[in-house]
Length: 296
Image 1 (cartoon, rainbow, N blue to C red):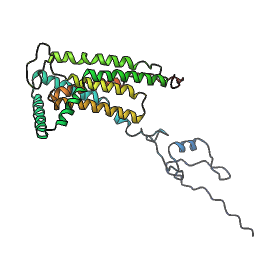
Image 2: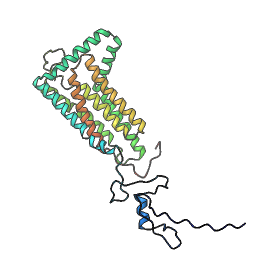
Image 3: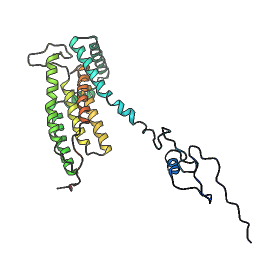
Image 4: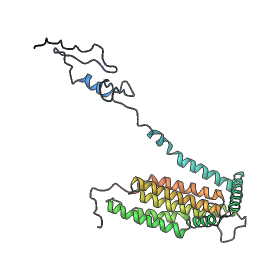
């Protein structure tokens, strides 16, 4: 049974919101291409598309979208890290040189630690404090630094980096930089230790803490060098291990009454500035097209 022909649907007179009306032809079919169609694809997507309508951030600039959220605040926050470290280091150094009121924080922290240590009376905590303090010695942290540079160079050689050898001199220069940063400051400030005894002729002073600086730079630079070829999870593990060691050495020195608290804080700031600078310096070039086979 034949049915009567149905009239063809006329296009709606109202245009979709945010899109210009399409040009028609004699057979009432919309033109699929053209300037109007291209513009509607970039800024005013019709409501029947899967992603619905999308508008740009500027009406006069089709296709312009807002920047990815979160990137701009992180970029603006990066200069705040060295600025804070420099301000804290200058403030603490000024107070130590002038014997200012901020040094009362050292006496308060020493008294609080002694009270806690006496109340707990834990031999284990005392041994842990001394053990962490020893991890900041040059006989422990510097070999770890040099070994980290050698392992990083080998990993980058196997990965095909152009300047695979660079981690080795970086580790060696860091090992030589530590006494150059700490020893002159110790001699200039000539700060007595927590027991208040006058400095002997062969003593440099307690400010800043050499063990804390050695741990911060030794373990931190080793972690930075190894992180160049590590997976994201490995980089997080390296950063956590370096932070734990640097914090443990500083707190162990304060717990064992080897250093004032501000001695440790100054070395943390000093080491943090070096690590912040080194982390933004391109130590290695991109891997070359040739990738070396493992074991060769």
